[in-house]
Length: 84
View 1 (cartoon, rainbow, N blue to C red):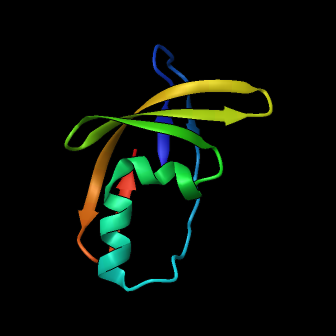
View 2: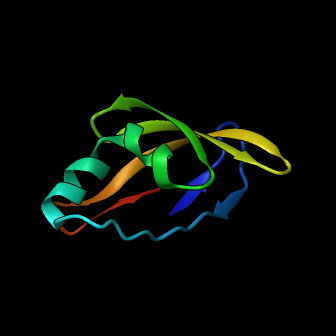
């Protein structure tokens, strides 16, 4: 997942892949609710949906915290999601 900090011109790559021990349709439904991402993505502290395909992610790292405006760019039911 690539992201750009709000109010910033610098890009950075944040990538994390997870496997959930549940049926693919159940996993898709769980992950499609953006609020659930903070449960299993290590850097994500909170997600606030701002639209049907957009959200404000609050990240926390050793160096501090930041908020990123993210867009759902790939939405394949029962297969996967991609946010940028």
